Amino acid sequence: MTTQEIQQGIIEDFSILDGDLEMTLNYLMELGEEIQLIDEDLKTDDRLVKGCQSKVWLECKKIGEIYKFYGDSNTSITKGLLSILIRIFDEKSQEEIVNTSLFFIERIGLNRFIGTQRSNGLQSMEKKFKLLALKN
Amino acid sequence: MTNFNIESVREDFPILKSQVNNHKLVYFDNAATTQKPLRVIEAISDYYKTYNANIHRGIHTLAEKATEEFENTRKTIKNYIGATSEKEIIFTRGTTEGINLIASSLGKKYFKPGDEIIISEMEHHSNIVPWQMIAEEKNLKLKIINVNSYGELDLNHFRKIITEKTKLVSIVYISNALGTINPVEEIIEICSDNNILSLIDGAQASAHSDIDVQKMNCDFFVFSAHKMYGPTGVGVVYGKEKILEEMPPYMGGGEMIQDVSFEKTTYNDLPHKFEAGTPNIGDVVGFKEAINYINNLGKKNIQAYEEKLMSYAKKELEKVEGIKIIGTSDKKIGIFSFVSENMHYYDIGLLLDAKGIAVRTGHHCTQPLMEKFNVEGTARMSLALYNTTDEIDYFLNTLSNILSR
Image (cartoon, rainbow over all chains, first blue to last red; front, side):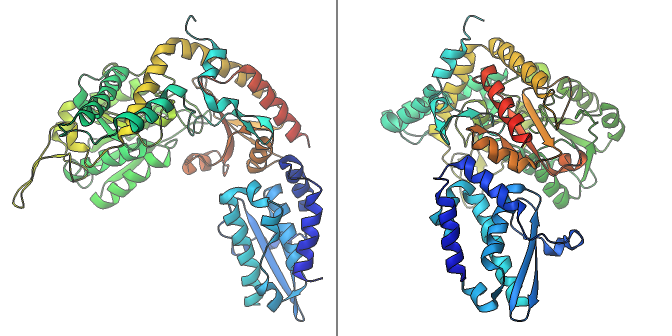
């Protein structure tokens, strides 16, 4: 599936929640439980995403031409957001990762829920995925 | 409690009727800013609708009326805090600007290299950073009073760190992160005995505590309108007249001058010497109504009601399993910082918001204090005169449900 198609799927998943904040937060926390978890000993400061209010770690491994991502956060809701981003960017090529624009956030109205401060955090996370793909 | 009826008090605050995320708003973020009663909102609106004009030096009717209303606020504040003269009341944008004004002005003449300034571990960043800046510039030493495990100042430590070089002590009256009420009168007395200037950060105290600057005998007292049911963007520096007279201006510009020539400029008298530029007239006018509102309800009535709320919240919050309250002094107001072992304060804050409850999460601009308590931040619920025990019950039930997920 392309990053476009994955985002379409996420939009459909969230549409069931009908914009209810509480259900959305609960769903995000559930998604956080399914994250591709980074090894505990890899949670070092250099893997922290700068610009997030909560702690977010992200690590990538290059396998052939594709990238596998692993992450974690000290807050459950952010962990859920991170797990969605991992679902989108995981096992994609450098070109596709760098050229992906994230349209699902606005479409599911997540920007309303996460507020401007946290949107900046989300942008920082997106940037980290792309930087990791470019550097490795 | 003749003048204090909680139902009618709540009617005075239009925002309390709001729905947030399909729930009735429960506003527990009062330590960050309080809501505004209608009379404050209307006073600001009335200024812009009917007599908006620049103040002082205007000869036309609107300017006269605007100046009168503006200066009436100064009088009201003078009486509210028990200052001796209106010359002692300087308008600022808020507490932060007030502390910066004092630090910067004293830094120009009063402080000498090697002098010492004392603050405490529980200060807001706005009572840390201005002193760090001036200390760096003037080669001063910043000393810090320890806080004990209950979140109280260690006065023995304070006495120990005073030297003959100590020139100023700047202390918060009530901690914004813990709610602790500090023994400011005792601190000021120690300062006074040792010929040290005292500055009290009254941002949290101004709405809740009795403020009498003459009785306290502090040299400076700073606070903000928006934490006492007034508008944002207005604050006050109180300073003893004889000290303010000796201090050089903070900013240069219009309003603060007597005569300007390229050879020599002379400064205006107090308080205008410290009020360069067109002030925030509309909000200053609104501020008066906030103080009138408090006075009409009666400080004693407000305190009695808030004390009841605080005791109830404290008793019930202590029963909630899985949380730790940070700041457990017996002398505190209705500010409760807490953390949970199982859930990050950030998640707690968002899940409460989904139920219409506004609390603050984070370090509350007190990072050194958070470090002291070994936390990065907390969830903080803070009460005001319009909150109710029903709201506290709803909050506690919601919190318990969130924590038991």
